[in-house]
Image 1: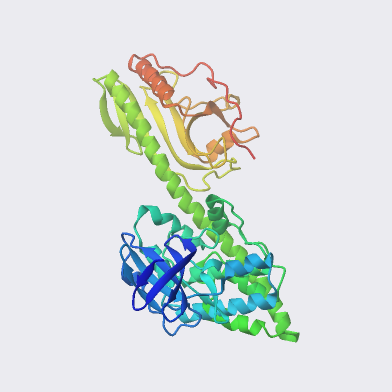
Image 2: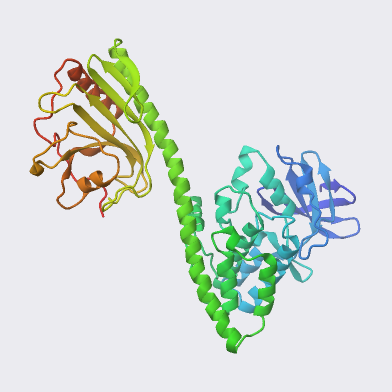
Length: 487
């Protein structure tokens, strides 16, 4: 048997469980006091002060009755609880009664109310709610602070519990007490309904669901309890109720309401449902903005690489070529004689740029390639192609594509660039439209193959340098199948 020597000597017994930041063993001291001893590894980046949090005076907290360190572990000794809320829910094999759920939630809300503004748990879940001395208490506050502060790479997966993590936790924002309220709402839903509001099962699904999805409506409990759970699961942290508000309303919910107050509670529940949907939409919009920013970074890196390969290949093949800057967007130019190739810089595409019936796919960024020659007697002065970073072929799979446009032959007029590039906007939207329009595709929307693109534009530049680049005799030059995603 192993003995831990702190203020008291504790003889370790069977292992009770383990979490991301320690192992728990049954223990007993020389006076016969039974306890649970948690061994927490001294992970780099987390300090002793984070672990040993003084929570005296707070209701419903499992106390630390002894502590210290030994070898590579910090040691916490706590009274041994009879069960965890997780074990209790597993034994119930389904939802618990409204009365029992309310009683448990009042105990948890009491603890959160006393700690509000002082300590954030960050990992509230049924495993950390323990039944001790006839009351449900919170454990592992210090452990959660410790987990939050660590910089060890192998412990980052424990920074949140996917089933209970608030939207702001998925965004890696600073956790406040509102994150604990959200986890409280998930636990409340689980107790009342018998299942979790967001089923996952994989971490990617949990992230998407917590950030964007509306929890299913609760069809059990009174209107006050339903509203409490719905509000606790609001996407915006600032819209969630405070722990003291939860406690007061839960306590009142134990009293049956009738007449005007009962009707007012029902009216409040309807308003909460409307507000919940508004919060969900706001969270989705915010997440979409963040996602576009990440996609734009990827688009930039890929385009830089493509432009780098193209310019390097041309300059290696034609050392006499001259680099410069030109065009409205100050793009990189490579000139050979009177021919000039311009690489249009990356531009961030707004979410709704089309000013016409929009295609089904989304464009995050756009650029282009322009080849200029002196204007000939047919008013031809070169060709230009669009480069779009979009999910044209598969929803959510973004890649660089190349395309180009033309004026409909039925109009009897033409442009000096043939074909011509177009930014995502009304001209491009009309060309992609199902109906007849003055604009059409002159080059198919096709995924960029860097090797083929470089060879093709090098050929056109060589023709231009030798005075042999002319307007295409027919357009489109290639078949333009409607292979992109359509509504």
